[in-house]
Length: 320
Length: 309
Image 1 (cartoon, chains in turn purple, green):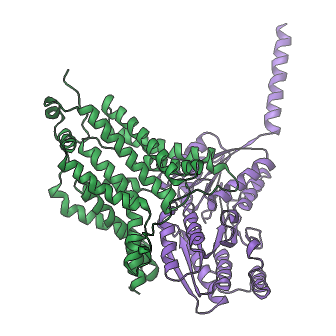
Image 2: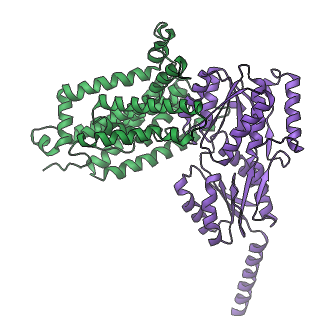
């Protein structure tokens, strides 16, 4: 009797071990700086993780509204809880990840919009925000009638600065001498202040505006909608929010970053390096013009298509 | 560049920046005068902003939203009152709990209701006033006659509350309780009841500040939209030396500093933006240095009262 029991136990344990080895569900944590409802930076990441959840055998935990001071402890707790992948969504996650990654060698740390990769387990993904800004600036310059356009940034972290610079240069390329206003909110979430800044630019004559940040972007869109001026969206296609205002969106495809990171980890092929995604890597894009399709001339649309083709071919020399 | 467009825009924007802070600061001034500190204004404003958007959508008018916001703010004030007055717990801890609670309730509530709708619902909001065309007057029109009705309510509220605190019997009671609840109790003033009333009032006012953000300045709720205005409001109470007119002036001062910095920023792209963003706060520190000496803090602020029974 006891021998049978021992045998059964041994068999059972063997089965359990085998099951554990063959189908290990990856535990993935996505740590966001803002809420998933911001219609831009965080919404884009949320879309990406939801798609990945369907595609791969992963269990996802999402932490929203993570303040600067909390980042390190949030990431540390996920690592302690045995998460296999921790994705920090934003430049500000870079330094804490650098500090932590060596202490948790079994966990992959992935940071978006930064350049902090380090062996053996810290990878970073960056999109060419400067190129996105360049195209947004070009579109804004082409649709502007008054020759004044504006960018309202959240906090000037490197990707937002790059977008700002690209926006200026892209606009100058299409219409030399165009006036480009620029100001920062000093916060990613202060939607009312972003709206006030946008209003002040519209008072100054701006008739096309664009914004980068988190919730702050909604303030710019609302000000543009009320004043009946045009806006260029960023990162996430939220045209439904203001279909008569948003000309197009300079897409920054965070969902592609996240899919790529998780896909590579599942295959065991992620390297501790900086992955940079541009138009060629499907990390950037331009949303359809929709209601503005008929308002843009065929020549202007051709110019925009040509510009993107030139960026892909590496022919544009003044990209930030 | 410092032309008419600049100054008209600046002054009109000053009132818009100042109003949400002013509502919260006026309510806080009254409750601090009665001796109860509420550092949770930020959370109450968030709940107010959310409920105003929800109520406006529900009833089809921003006034419905305002009523719901005031009710919610009063409820949060009552919670703070219960914890800090009846249970005599630490007021700062209770206030911090309100901040976290407000963030959670507003964010979760929003996603359960408006945030989950596709396409996003349009929220009825207050239109700017016109005063029979006066808002079209050059220069003064947009500044004084083209604001939302809540702006005028906040300014009128400051005057009324000033009168209430310094010229009425109830105001005298409130001030007495804030100075010495024991003495006030000895002469027959209902200390606990009055404190409850002021804290509930403070919550309702903070919620109106939130309602201004979501149904006047913007139309619609956005998570975290209060963005620190609740803390600035507490600072305004101190700068205003615990008087309603002082709190109003402090809120306008902050509003103007912000309205100026966002304009100067885009006119001076070569100066680092941090300089402009910190500008209102630098002014605050400087003002505090000069005013610290003559501070008139209520003597019993933050001290729970134990009725001698």
